Amino acid sequence: MSRKHQRGDEEGVRAVAGINDARATAMLCSHVTDEDWLLRYSAVGALARRGVAEGRSCLERALTDAHLVVWSRAIEGDQPLRACDRTTLYEEQLRQKDLTPLPRTEAESALEDLRRRNR
Image 1: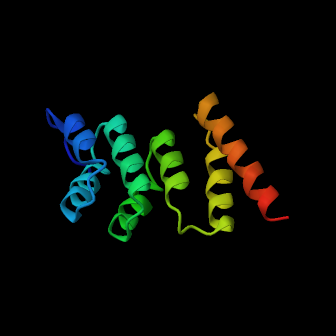
Image 2: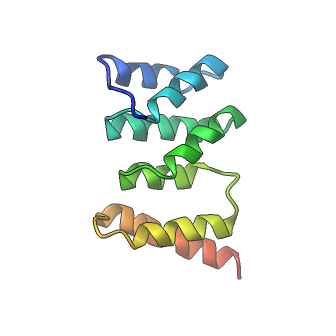
Image 3: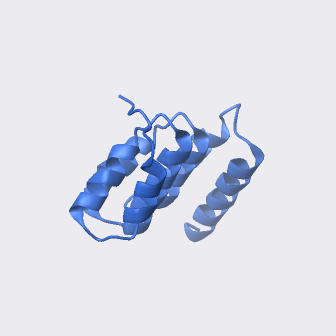
């Protein structure tokens, strides 16, 4: 279920992004389901940089985001994903008809890197 964007949410995400506290993680997780894709993208990015176990389920949720840049950010940030899982997600992303050039280039580059490492 998505959460309705509220005034000041962007500032809140920026303010807590670097704070190492469970309450900050919970706040960021609450924005992963926001109606605003840009806020979701920011929250996913902040959670990915934190790398805390408490944020993992939120990053996993973002792996099914309807907006492809949010989805891409979640793939990049969900470090515990195995290389084969990342490969599958990037390949699936590349099959999307509405993928814009930048996420396409990023996905292709990430796939190339993954394949090079797995040789």
